[in-house]
View 1 (cartoon, rainbow, N blue to C red):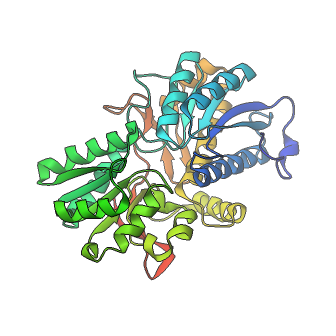
View 2 (cartoon, rainbow, N blue to C red):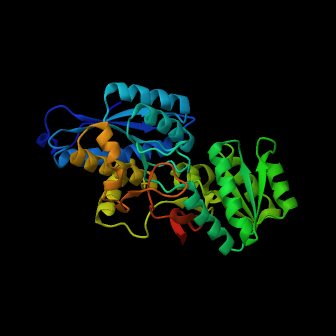
View 3 (cartoon, one colour):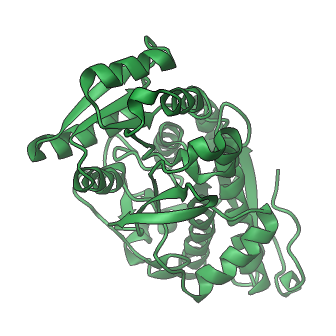
Length: 370
């Protein structure tokens, strides 16, 4: 699957294309809506690059592969894309999948700019070949924990499933709130039906429940059950991983899905580039673009600048991360070595805690910024 033909203006490019491999979850069990937004941002940026003359006169081309949230499928896609001769890899939303892709790309010497995955340990060992735009999980989730504490929540329950990502999130929350007098209570949803989750919340005296679980199952049934339990009328439901960001959440839950704070990576106000991109993405998606769409656009913006400045040699691309200085849709992007992070990191994209307004569920309220 390749990017659609560019709009008028691409005739200024010529010769063979410069190819970038794009990893995107486009089928279940991947988070398809997130994948569609990520791909829309990637494709729009490719169109804009080509309308501006491409990569030193050569058109930029996406070679898209569906990861379906499957680490093995992602690793196989990296192998295929490397054989096809792509200059670099872009994309991926799911952290566990991105980790598998990053490991394979590193082993093959293929530079990878990860768009949206946040797991701190994106690679087991430090590497020069991988860079990331999304804030590390420890950075964003500590900001979320501060929001909870400032709102008076010190007994925080987490409904969780087995996953490196959810386990990492639970550890970040516990390490941050425990020294500040908070407690994190783990509820394993494998052993608890949604009604039993409600009973546990009452029994443990929790004032907040965080959904560290998959979407739509079991997140949606848990929300419905909690919302209908009169004993839990005052409890805060939260979703730091961002499940309520996408329209499907509101479609499935309606008003039950409002007032559930989550993390998103957007500034208070978009600059001129971000505002223009938002307008075009809204037309393409027929809905408001999520932060994931902006991450996709920024990924190609960075890679295009690197390719113009350093060419298509993979080793030179990998060496270029510390010299990147690009204006993206959400601010100026530069990469650095950050303690505890194994890849080149943009430190940091803007971070907000937002929710859907109960009075108008299609509108987002900014509750806290970090």
